[in-house]
Amino acid sequence: MLPLAFVDIETTGSNFDRDQITEVAVVTLKSGEIEYYETLVKPQTYLPVFIQTLTGITPEMLHDKPLFADIAPELHKQLSQKIFIAHNARFDYGFLKSAFHQVGLEFRPKVVCTVKLSRLLFPLEKKHNLDSIIKRCGLINASRHRAMGDALTLLQFWQHCEQKFGTQRVIEAAQAILGRPTLPPHIDAQLINSIPDSPGVYIFYGENNECLYIGKSKTIKTRVLSHFQSAITNRKEAKLSMQIRHIDWIETSGELGALLLESDLIKKRLPLLNIRLRKTSSLFAWQLNLGPSGYLSPNLISKNDLAPGFQDNLFGLFKSKREATNSLKDLAEKNSLCDAILGLESVKVGQPCFAYQLKRCAGDCVGKGNQNSHNLKLTTALQHLKISKWPYENPIAIKEGDVCHVFDKWCYLGSARTDEEVHELLNTGTAQFDQDIYKIVRRCLLTKGERQLFQLRPPVESSC
Image 1: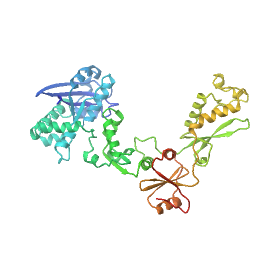
Image 2 (image 1 turned 120 degrees about the horizontal axis):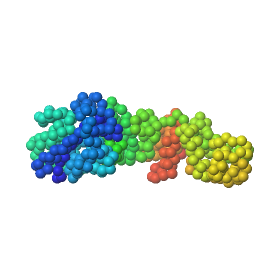
Image 3 (image 1 turned 90 degrees about the vertical axis):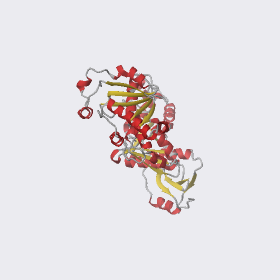
Image 4 (image 1 turned 120 degrees about the vertical axis):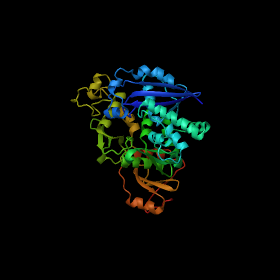
């Protein structure tokens, strides 16, 4: 087994993107010999008063100390080719990885968290924070919340476990931790083991039961574990992992059901870290109209006038007027379209648009262009944004397992398991057009796979 490096750091706060390290201690156990390394570090940020009170480290103590960049080469050497052992290791590892990255050094050690080691060796104990371990094992810590004091406590804990269980048992426990995805410090392995590896939605909760993140997968357990595995190298995943206090999940009949449920839950619960699928109050699309001059002109249609599924001449969708306008401007620039004809610029009749002066417009604004050519370029450029008409005369049911998902005009009416439930959805189910549901259903219709699809007619004769 590699040498063991028992590590502890003190910092200006808990966010390793914003806060900085103020003290580092490494106690190395190699072939029975113990080596010590410790240093204070001058942060280039404010040291909060409550951190000063907790640690006893003051700005005056750090004034003439080296910056992290100055100690980085030696500290990196101290930690190289060793197993990194820390309490709530994601915190110490996350800060050091971020700090090393900022000075151009790669840091990817094998990591053992003593919280997990304690849980593995003392499964009947409820508390595994460092103060509880100190009390339970009768350890001595002369300088709690100082880096060397806490690092020495971790060494004592390791030695206590060796005396109680034997060196081989402790090594096996450490190797078991190294051989599996590192779980968040507040998540028990039994909870992870109970998660099914089937289609569905998973929900991460933080403190005070705050909804942090909602995701979906065809294999929930595998996807959840991938978050924690990625946290070793991915900063965003590491930050999420440190905030998680509980995990919940809902199984679905298949991937389509998971997509629909994820979209619905995100809009209802507004998880802190989900932005993409949140409900938007505004929705816009471009509609092409043929003007008296013979040119097609885009007209911006708002949510109240939109009838996706019925209208054949819609292009979008956009969550704001700005997004719609910027998209059209981008298409005009890439395809040499006239800003004046498109209504993006107001000019007097016969006057050139600004794009013409830049030689990006063919001169349609001054009568030099060709109507058919401009109209063709515009419709071709917009084609990838075209909103499809509903391809069926009636509502449809898409069967997935023992569930039927019912849709009409790109709207999701709900899911049902019996003919009676399908009837009820058709008679009472109402839903507003939703951009995300539109994309989900459209993609599903293009790649139905083994799913069965039925058109529904009143009275409903469902095949569910």
